Length: 192
Image (cartoon, rainbow, N blue to C red; front, side, top):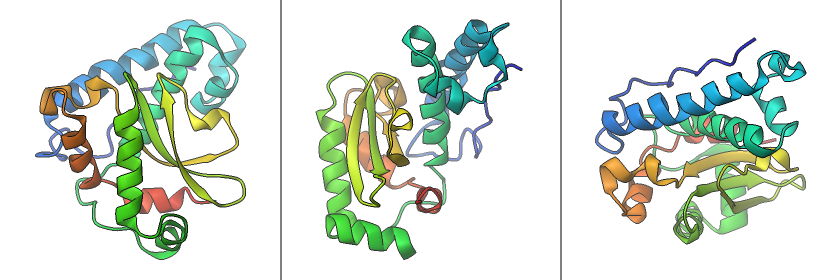
């Protein structure tokens, strides 16, 4: 059964002025769609075509892994954003963040340092390790914590296609906008 490009969980104009409809058209409508189409072409008629995307990521390698992981990472990224989000986390997530980083501002600073340090294309993640501790990790290209033992909680796409139309090469400005859109309720729902 072919994978479907999931709809965005908001309208293409909902993230403005932080992320433009033009960027979403390019990022979701072309890049993300391209990854889904590539995965479908590669799994057609194989034993993988009955698996959910998450399992394809975990059971593939090479160019199929690259396309499947990019599709999964993008699915996750869209969920991490919301037009009526931003602010600070609350509840158990806030307790974890305060315990691990001191406060949410320190989390943002450390996360931004990691995202700005990614040379070229990649992703910066807030993850929860099996021992319950939170950490910030960056992955290059399509790599994802989904293939390891840590649980992804939050991700920021730092590939240039995620922000170039709106911010050119100013990744730091994109990160400022990103924090105004973080869907803390979704992030909290990922805690184990």
